[in-house]
Length: 614
Image (tube, one colour):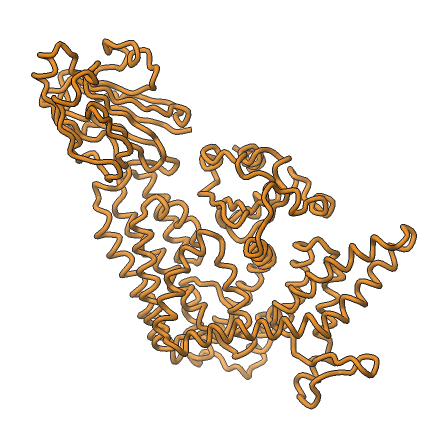
């Protein structure tokens, strides 16, 4: 399908245009504020080709697309008519659920930083590479070449409030150029020069009201708070002015009031709040660098999955502004490398060539700093690999924290950012990468045996195998109308020679009937399969059956589920045919029998039926 068709399918899966309050995107995800999250069809959504996964957290639906998310958002904007008119009509009250403070805060942080991260990451990468080359003496930081390139890299960070103001203006639905004007006032040379000189602590407004002197360069929290305040001032002023005066006087009065309050009250509060956050992180490191590493490293992978990782960005930026360096970003680097290592280990475990391709590309993406494909496409499927990545991230972060590894510029947590660590902390940083990758790879390798890997393709196709040694029977040939007419679902049947029953797929045991004659298994992709041993054997009260598993057990096609006493079943006048049936056929696109199935009998584990999912 084309991108437009994919986007139309996504909108439909979300309950249609009428169910969408607002939409925006970060580097890898489409983010939605919905009226009613219960209208979302997750099965349908997650089967759309570009969708790597989805998660609903903090009253926000996140649809993971990957690094080409901007292409899909452009189409989404056209489909939804995303403009100021669209946004201005959408409020929290439109949603069925009132957002709590934390949810709103996460929406704001992700919404503000998502669009500007590419500029920050690009400039940070250039800055980090230049710092690395200077440390290696490949270039002097006093040469005109270095100075010109440094202007290119440092401009974003010096004037970061401008970028934040425009992005916050869009999030808070206020004129972004008036928002930019307030940011410009806060960074006006008079303010910057006074803060640099340090001779005065405040300007006196009207000869009486103090306006504190601060250098707002590189800060984010004061600007976000100031634009948030403007979003209340603007509509209040606009509401109380005659229509003929609004065009000129609404921006004039809003800028005057909003700017003065920002300079005199909100901006300083933001400075102190940012300092408080930075001091809190600094305190944690002072208590125990190792503990700080363990905590940050452990929460980072789950934070990425839930979309809360953007909350670390303003703290890191505040650290750069306050102390000239940051120790959180190296830990983010370790987390990405741990995720890449665990994903790479899964590559060597999967059997499907198509799935190996998906896993390998996800691992490469993680090494390059984009972890969502690995997390949502691989590690959510293989939970033990996710645990391994979390352990690797935590231990590697504790290791580098012990040695005080830090970075002096915001930079994407990619393997290509390594030159930025050249110098005192280069060796510990390299060792941290080796620990993160090596440990997560090794733990994944040990915790996921090859036979336990789900036999699925990239979009979840399933291969059903023979459950016993015996003869394959088409389901339509079974002597029971419930099965032969496929009232419960489609599948296959077998005449058993040994009575030993194995699992047809890899998955989890979900149900064992009290009479032991039927077992339910669900695959990682959500396919529900019933193994029904014999016809009308429920009447035998479980006597001819011995079951070796229990609900919740993980099983593979090598797992022995049960033993049937075929002689006792037939002596009771019952048919011992074993039926293997998919009971949630709404997930299934098609079933096809393996053309190489022998007519004279098969052994357990022989591929019999290929199942394509919707």
